[in-house]
Every structure is written in structure tokens, then in C-alpha cells.
Length: 207
Image (cartoon, rainbow, N blue to C red; front, side, top):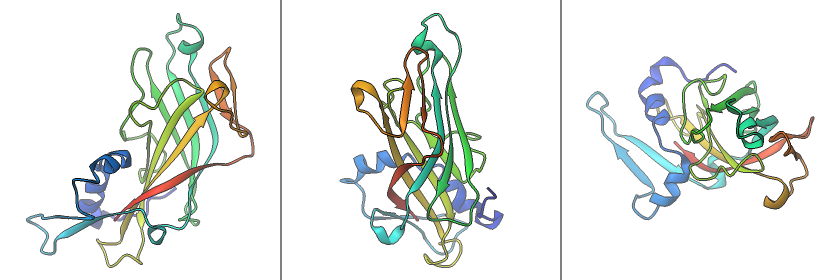
């Protein structure tokens, strides 16, 4: 999927990529105003960041397909193989954009990536991570995905950049059965049912 963000918006894009996960905004909600103004010496007009959870900021959800998680160490404590989560991402809010493939990997003894890392997804406008403290094995974890794109209804460049944050909880067995998510716990391998789509609920928009 080709990124829609031109180089002339590099200042705005770099700022958005450095934003903390949306889960942190909820914790900070009592301490920040709805609009935080950032001043840069090279920008004449203040750059405002709006944190919006209303439906007016987005109309669709994130679609996750082809999801698979493989954790050999969970099935065999002697294994030294990495844990890997992979999936295909699509945003209902940008129907003309191509899907992006994402893959998160972490080594035995390490925690899953809890913040956006470069190269996780095939499109740099899409970022994914596992929120801190939400991974309890292949049958109980969460994925957070962020997608940044141009939305000219928000205003003129560079004020037309929108970032959506979506969440997907995956459970099986004792953690709660999902009809489209199956696990083979003897191999610590879980995957979405072929030809089905899991919906990651979009909860926040930052523009």
C-alpha cells in the first residue's frame, strides 16, 4: 500500500509517528485538554493536535485477516524460537488503499513490542504493537494498530493528517471463545479462520 503522505508533510508525519499508543491517551485524559497546541520555530501557524473519539472523526473500523500467532516456547520450554504474530490490515476509512501486511516478532525471554517499531508493517503509515501488559499467551492478548493518512475534510495541508487507533482482543479457551479464532495449544499456535475478517474497533482519532 503506497503511503499517501507527501514529503512536504514530514514535520507532521514525524510528530504523529512519535505519538504514544492510544491507550496512554485514556490515562492522560484527566490531565490534558482536548486540544494541545505545539509551537515550532519554523512554523508560523501553531500546529494543533486534536484527540477525538467521536464518530465524526472516522466512520469505519479496521479489518484484520490472515492472523496467526506462533509461540514455540509456550508449548516447549526448551525451544529457542521467536514468537511471531502476523496479519493483513485494511482500513474501512480508506477503501482505495491497498491492504498492508504486518509481522511482530520477539525472542524468548523478552516481552512483546509495546510500542510502534519501524518495519513492522509493509506500509509505513500503518503501525502495530501489543499494548503493555496485555499479552498472556497465544490464547489471550491484544493488538493495537494505528493508521495515518490524508483527510482533506479536516483542513488544508499540513492540517489534513489523521491518525486512527484501533484495538483487537483475541481470546480462546478459558479466556473466552471467539468464533473466528482457533488455537492448537499443543503447538501454541492460533489463527483466524480462513476467509474471515476480525474487526479491530477504532476508538481514537488524532489530527
